[in-house]
Image (cartoon, rainbow, N blue to C red; front, top):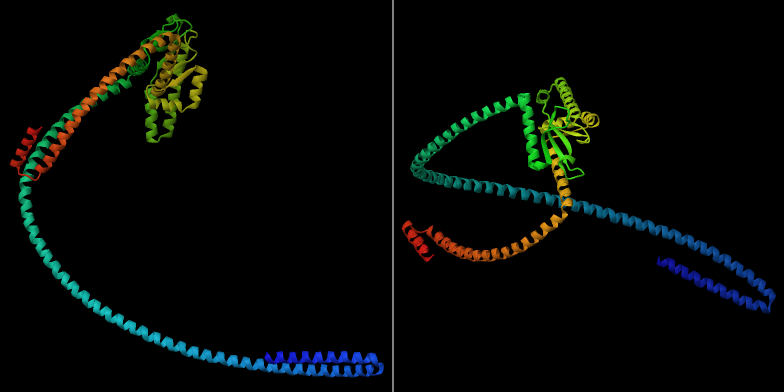
Length: 442
């Protein structure tokens, strides 16, 4: 590369010389025109010679550069080959050294393994010997403990067995009494079954449950029992709820007829068929149950609905929640009862909710009619609350006194508790003396 720089520098100087010669000849040509042409020819010849020499020199330099590059590549190849050979030899040496090191480590590991196995065997033998001694000592101690425990258990067992036999005798006596109660209960269940299988008794039982709900929620003047709806008829509705009319007279009230029905045979056949998984029998039982409900609804509608004496609807009370749920599932049946017969189905829970809503309406109406009395009562309540506040002040004072007494009792209790904890480590005689001293301090 330094040769190329030198070559270009020489060419640059040569070109400067040629330019200076051209300038000199141009200056002379101004004075003499003929020599100028001769000078130009000479200059052209010189330039051609210079071009040829430059081309030759460039070709020579290119050849030298190629030769130099080839020599450098050969040297680099030889260097790389030498480095690869030395690297291969080095890697072979390293592999040999690693193999020797691994063999040495393996030998040391084998030696350590054998040494550890020997030490572990010695430890195992020592531990086995110690464990044998410990087992023998434990066996002797267990024998002594077993003898002591057997002696104590014998006395405790005899005592516990006596108590257990006594408890077993008492329990057997209780079981005997329970069996008597079960016999009585079985007899009662039999009587209940007889009641439920008798049509008249079933009707009475439904009426009793219906009457109990009415008596529990409504006041006696808010419902009637065994009411003749039609004066010319001989039919009596079991119960009728009185709704307030336009006036205050009882004759102005409107009645809601309520009748209890309990078709237990059809419902029992339906339950039995469903438990057996007999679809045909269940379908037949449902059909008979729906027919019975429809017939009962028609009877209530024809006998007990007489507007304006009554409302234009009546209530059929089913005393069993299961029966009510089974009927209410039949939407077509319920729609028929409400649309054709003007009858509403009610179970124990829904009828109780209906009565509660009626009771709230009755109370609201009574409050509206007696608002003056309500204000008077509120005035009395206000005065009563004033007296009640005075009573509360007195009670608070008494409670403060009682709290002081309780604090004193707690202090004495903590004192006794501390001494009782100390009694746990004292002999019986000393404990009795300590308790007596505590009682004397109290």
